[in-house]
Structure formats: structure tokens, C-alpha cells
Length: 607
Ligand code: ADP
Ligand code: MG
Image (cartoon, rainbow, N blue to C red; front, side):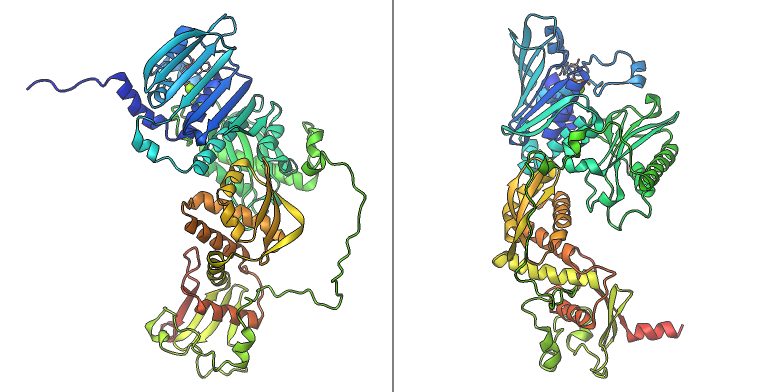
């Protein structure tokens, strides 16, 4: 038998390695931005075309490379950042593996231009799929300008697996945010298809956070500072009242590297104990500095998890530091000497001249009209009075209940129950109880109402859209740019809900009209929730987008647990739930009601 083992040619080996380092356009953005940071750049410009699928370009004014180095940089394991194994324990650069450029060049059309400060002329190298096409001497400015075109052009399977432009762009923006938050002292800009998404000037951390997440973030921040032997903490958390329904803006940086840690996240959330409403999350931007030898430095470029030697101690320090700051903040306003005065002017007022106050009179105001609303909004087309007046006609209400075969063919209400008495009761302002022939039914008011609204909205959205009300004063919704990208991805479907967005800016959208079913003060929460759902569920087709919108509308607007319901409201929910096509489950798949049969009850008493 002849020998059959061969060493893979470099470009094949690089292509295989590339699959690990480069998962999507955002991975390239991360590597190139980090290289620019490592090269001590003070200005880093990122240019993207078609969500990075056709072009990713990073221009820096850092140290640049000599012509030999520029050539060598594309070899595997070529790095200027470590020399010996010992260096691994005191890494203070982003890169150190020397893999990124070789990997990226193996699967793209790459052009690099680079020049060191003291050189007259610079170097340009073109590489296609790992093969050097040309190397030239060129005139260029100090620093490095690297252009990556046609990602995965030679691995069609990978290219086909890239997600929609909206999703890939979101990943890029997430990456850009993480790197730019790590280095507030560097100027960063991001352009997508020629429009400027971010222009962040160097400054302090507060200014950077505000630059990334919008001017209205400023008032929300509470500074955090602690210095112990094993851990130094810097950064900001948000005041409890600004906590959000979505997890969005939660950032840990360890030694300037963005990491995810559900354990440390728990420490933060735990410190807010008693200050957050159920289901709300604080935002935080926490910069942890630990001795480099207390973490596992062998972090894979695509991983954001990290191993600490002393996780429990860190947990305790983080928790108590945050608790302390929240306590202080609650007692006295925070003194922040880093504060930048221009940040304190509300965004919309900075460029506006003052206006004489006007008095608005509502000609329709009627002091005798009660404005007490029933919490449960009646459907326009359902006529609950008829349920009372003509209750005989309405009797076979629950034809399609699927709980038990026995019920399906029977009348729901126990015949013996006297109509003068309530047929439903509310317990703990959470469940509606009623008797049915086979026993009792317990309905979760919130989940049931979600189901009812969901079916109603879905029908309306797919038929002719929901009615909307024009707002007298448009609402500004401040969002971070990646969320705006997500929102814009389903703008047309949003329109059918009655939400009309008139203007889109870098960090906010202006809403001109909202659905009639929604209160003005609910709209921001609703939009945040919608974005979060879209991020998690990633609906690709328009139909599933409408479905997601209907679900979120239903969840936002359904009566909540803890709301007291009148008897009428209870009965409406009861009846309308069982009119639904799928009464058994909430739109998010939870059971809307449970039944307890007489046998089950009797069994309990005969124990
Ligand atoms: P690593 O960053 O792990 O060292 P890379 O493949 O990302 O590996 O880069 C290889 C080398 O190329 C770096 O060590 C650095 O010396 C050089 N390099 C890469 N990008 C730049 C840049 N923007 N400016 C200057 N040098 C760079
Ligand atoms: Mg690198």
C-alpha cells in the first residue's frame, strides 16, 4: 500500500480555519476593528455595504505595517502581539492568535493598504481566496485601510446561510457598539450603504454611552466605582425606574473585552432586588478589571464566555457595589463631576428657539361625562348586553371547547346555577372561576385575554388593518440604532397595526399615529417588546411578521394579573375565550385555563 496522508495546502487549511473564526460579516468587523485598536489608532472608520456581504472596510490611522509585515500578517499564526508562551499571561491586546487576517483573506477578496508613519511610501497587497494576487508600493496615508469584499465567495454553502440584511446588519451594529464602548477614548464612525449610522467622538465613558444609545440615556445613568484587590469596577447602571421590558443594553467588559455571563448578570439583577417590576430588566455598562492571570485567556475569537478563577467573590463584590450605589442614589442625587453640560439639554430642545406658551382648549370637554374606563375594552362587534337579555339564544356558547369530550356536547353552564347569582368569580385578581357541568374551570385572566385579542388583531391585520388615531403631539421613541434597523425591517406591517412612523433618525423614531386600541403611554413599551420579540423569533416571512405583531399587541394590551374585574368583564372574558378558534392556549403557547372535575374534587376530599 502506498502512503495516503498529505499535508493540506495552506489555503485549504486557512479556509477550514476561517470557518471557525468567521461566522458572519460581523465577525470580520470585530477582528478588523480590534486590529485597528491594537495598532493604537485614534480614528477608526467602518464602512459596510449590503450588511457586509459585499464590502467591509476598516480605515485606521494607527501604526501601520512595513511591507514585509504586511505580507506576513496574512500568514497563519503570524502576530506581533505575543512572542513567548509567557506572554499569554499578560495579554493587553485584543488579538494574539495571529489567525484573523489569514482566515479572512482565505474566504474573500482582500485589499490592504498600509503605511507606517516614518515611511515615504506604503504597501498595497491584494489577496483572493488566500492567494496573493499583487503587492505594490503605493502612496497612502499613515495607518491601515483594509477592504474585504465578497465574503464567503468561495464557500457558497456558507454564503447561502447568511441571514437577511437586516439581521446581519444588526449583528454588525452590535459588534460596533461593543468595541466602541470598550474604547471611549477612540473616535469611531460607522457607515452603511453610504449613510452614517454612528459618529462617535472620543470622550469619557458617559459621553460614549450616550453617543451609542441616544441622548435620553444620560439621565438614566448611575455611576459605579469600586476598587478591590481582585476586582476593579467602573461604569454605569441605570436607575430602577428606567428598567426596560427587554434585556437590551446589558454590557460586561472584562479587561476591555466584551463578555457575556449569566452568573454576573444575576449578581447585578440581584442587587436591584425589590426595585424592579416583575419582567423588567436594568441596563448596565460595567467594566471589570481583574488580574490577567485570574481569567482563562485562551478565549476563542467567536466566544464571549469567560472563565474566572474566583467567580463567587466577583459575584459578591458586584452585587454589594451596585446595591450600595443604588442606595446612595435613592438617598441623594448623584454628583457627577464628569458631566458634560450640553448633554443635559433635552435632545429636541438643543436647536429650538423658545416658543410662547399656548393654552389648548378641548371644545369637546364635558365635565359630566365620566372618564372612568372599564379596564376591559369591549370589542366593538361583540354585544355583551345581548348575553344577558337574550341569554337563552346565546346558549351554545362553547361549542368548540376541547378540554374534555364530555363538555363538547353539553351546555357549559351548570343548569342548576341560578341566574341571579354570579356565574363567575375572580380570585386574587388573577383567575376567573366558574362552574361547568363536569366541575369547575379556572381561567387565567391575562392569558385568556391575550388569546382573545390575538385572534381579533390577527383577523383585523390580515383583512384591512387596524384603525389608527392621529396624535396631536407626535411621540418620540428613543431606540438604539440596531433596534431601529429591526423596527424598520417590518415598517410596512407596522403600518397595518395603525402605527405610523413619520421620521426615522439615528437614535429615535417619531410616531404620528397609533392604533385606537392602544393608550399613548403604552406605545413605547409595546414597541420595545415588539423589537425584542422580533430579535428572538426572527420572523422571515411577512405572514409570520403579522403574526408576531398580533401576538405582541395582544400581550401588551391584555388585562394584567392584579387587575380587578367587574362581573361583566369576567363574563366577557369567559365567553369570548370560548368563542376563540383555539381557546386552550395563549398566543405564546401557555394554557389559558384549567378544569377540575368533580371526580378530582371528590378524590381530594376522600383522601
Ligand atoms: P492578531 O491580531 O491575533 O495578532 P491578525 O491576523 O488579526 O492577528 O493580525 C496579524 C498581525 O497583523 C497583527 O499581529 C498586527 O501586527 C498586524 N496588523 C493587523 N491589522 C493591523 C492594523 N490595522 N494596523 C497595524 N497592524 C495590523
Ligand atoms: Mg487580530
